[in-house]
Length: 232
Ligand code: CTP
Ligand code: MG
Image 1: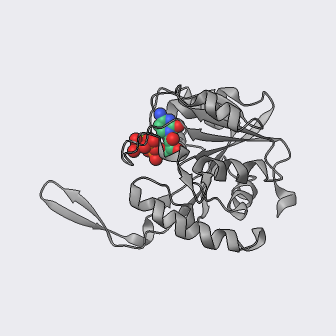
Image 2 (image 1 turned 180 degrees about the vertical axis):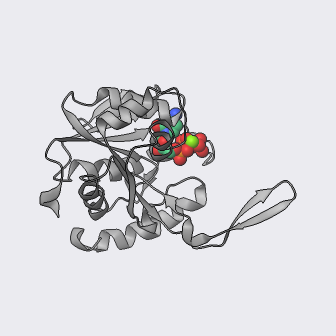
């Protein structure tokens, strides 16, 4: 329940400092327009309007930081780094001193239902880190030198964002000289005793990686906008 949420300051960090090399456009994917709005604006709006979020920090690369500052005056905007993890770290350092909870979100993942943020914050009462995850729909295999092995699909999850943590735990994990592609992986490696858990994600929270993903997002956005906030 909402009343079980943490009472301290909750800060959202939206990482938008990537170049989108796999997507392939000159302007990084998070700054492209989708149905007349900038892709970044969708996630910014979700966090700015969430009643439990106290501040939103957007991390952008040098070429885009000034533009982001002028388009999102309600957010704090800071310079990113050369890896996603570096960008997250810069965002962490920009959080308020009294931040207790941080929610790290990919700008390339524009659709984030309010109920997913709610579920993460609720579960975080009893955990150090929580992220949404979905079950893969397809059969999964691991490619090996001499063939492949089957992986049991029921044991696998696709991990999404926002990845939400007690701020001191995530900051601690960042000081151990360990690298990973996401915060759940980083914290698990850096602090094996950390209590980490997942909530059920939604397919619509997919990340835009290649150009074809944009068409999927366009489709999801249509149903997302026709549903009320409560039904999302
Ligand atoms: N990101 C970031 N700083 C980086 C790299 C990535 O803030 N140095 C952000 C991206 O902007 C994106 C999120 O991390 O919102 C997830 O990364 P990904 O989907 O890999 O985006 P890109 O790194 O931009 O794309 P690519 O890997 O294809 O270059
Ligand atoms: Mg990348």
